[in-house]
Length: 455
Image (cartoon, rainbow, N blue to C red):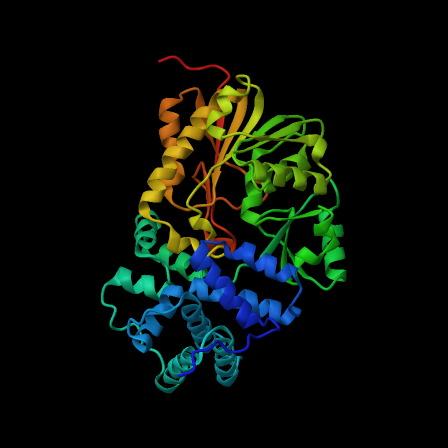
């Protein structure tokens, strides 16, 4: 057998790039959204192929456990190189989920990629597996008798996450959440309204060929159904920010007057910092991050948005904030805490395979340490806003409850936003992914009492 590698494909295709991006995610724990943005910014693909690339990467990640369950009988435990595994998953995803793509087109390009990246034996193996799938079809889920295991394979979500959700919200709501995670995330942007009105931004985007809808979650957000916003002059000049509409609710809930001194304790990459700055007039936001390169990114974003005068970016671990700033020196403090990110499974689907139950426990400790550090910095009558992009109670209301037990000088207020998105009877705001087709988010609003009640 001639195992000499064959000639590589010189022109990148959506399928080839999808295989390469997915392989990097597996090998390097890279984030899909970052790799996709990098690939799309290179402008090697047409808009149609760019959309296909996005669909393939997100589709394989969102359905990985299902696809692996279907693929296993055809590879019978054979150890595959990561790129070969991803090539088969990309091909299987198209065959099972993208019925407008002819099977022959899927097969032909898979063979070309196998020839390009491997030797003739790999080509024959890939060809044989895909022919077998087309000939016999994939197995169903009937052999999965254990209910949680079956849900895990059907919805491609690890069992521990399903168990947590069932405990929190019950079986019916869990199914709704799981079903929503298979949807392709929409593109959302937030308008810097001190730079341009929402109406003007929408008009310019539509004139440029974008399909635009007004968000039902936040008045300053727009949903892009068609088009790549990275190419828009509005984005390039800082009038628009890439930010999910649920994430925009965090600063919305702070109800800033514009004159405050604000601390954004966990600020990178700076989306919420820029939103705070957008609402400030004479006030200033101090943005912290532990990593210097991320602080530089915040500064770059502030410059692009023309907010440099209102943003002070500092390299500092939020857990040390109490040693750097004077007591009660901020009218508002935001802790957008490091978390498991389980609310982002639609936008960053690979997260579900990387996290474990212990991660939530470990993160809760870090979250409490950050709150402990910044609490003394909140002025009397000032607000401490706590947010995460997870939907796990361990990192959300449990953290607030533990914090308040130690800090009677704080009280939890009802979290309110410009639009009525919150359920009645709850102090905190939890947005689940199924409710608005947005990211999952948690927001709690605390206030330092002006006087501490004595027992």
